[in-house]
Length: 330
Ligand SMILES: Cc1cc2nc3c(=O)[nH]c(=O)nc-3n(C[C@H](O)[C@H](O)[C@H](O)COP(=O)(O)O)c2cc1C
Image 1: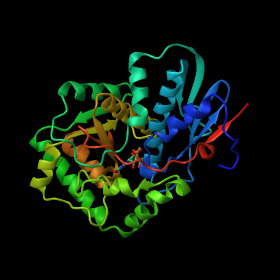
Image 2: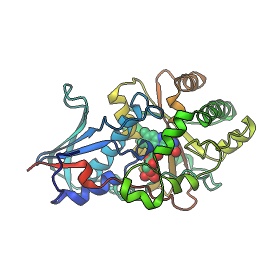
Image 3: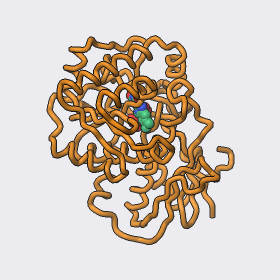
Image 4: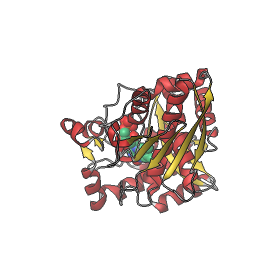
């Protein structure tokens, strides 16, 4: 953005941490924030384009939905009551979320817990510890997404694991050999010493720390292993995979899918778990359709979320400076 004022005032730290801790496709952080005395508006940056990873921009909008949850929790943490409106101005489609500041009220216990989890969340792409996620926690994660009108299907049983393994394998093989895809991935991969200079892109160290094979290698590189079906089913059996979906496939659904993703992720972190999201398999239309068919879903799959007990802490990714994304108005 060129029209940026130097950020200052009570909101600088608040919004800085909220945005800098949000997940986004290839860590593009495709948003800008406009702060007015009575409202805060999150817009989508349409100049961030990923023709191979996100050809229709769906993941960009999902990312904005996830960032909006962090903003809402930040406002609630300082006792601001907010009214959230998705896509508030039809004639301004890149304006994705508006928070009207409508009063004051203490944050609830859940809001406090989720807000405390914001800086602890990160993409845990490595395999998880060999301990099952308690079913009661899985139920909490499903409920967290339900608050955004997004359904979650926890994958269970041999038939479902096999159906998932088949589609993850097909996606992994397709991306491994796709030159354009790999070139785009290389462009958005950042060495640690360049974090400050670039401010966006996936940390190379976070990919090296990842598992070598599908599904734990969330980002498929030329040498990522795609195990045979039986081995992949065994790998999947050691994790919990949650499929999320919506009844429609428009911008509002994508924003809600992002918001649900972030609520689920923060709920998991608050419960001592870790997670990693994958949408790349769903960017292949035939995989998205086939997965829905094999699982008998009527709606549209939006994200795949792996959840489990953490092993270590995921490496940090670069972040854009707040001056790059925030615009204040007196
Ligand atoms: C909509 C969306 C799609 C994503 N897709 C993938 C994916 O397919 N594979 C993957 O490993 N990470 C994926 N991520 C995770 C991002 O790469 C990650 O959030 C970003 O690099 C920032 O790192 P952090 O999550 O550790 O803060 C996705 C994140 C979002 C919000």
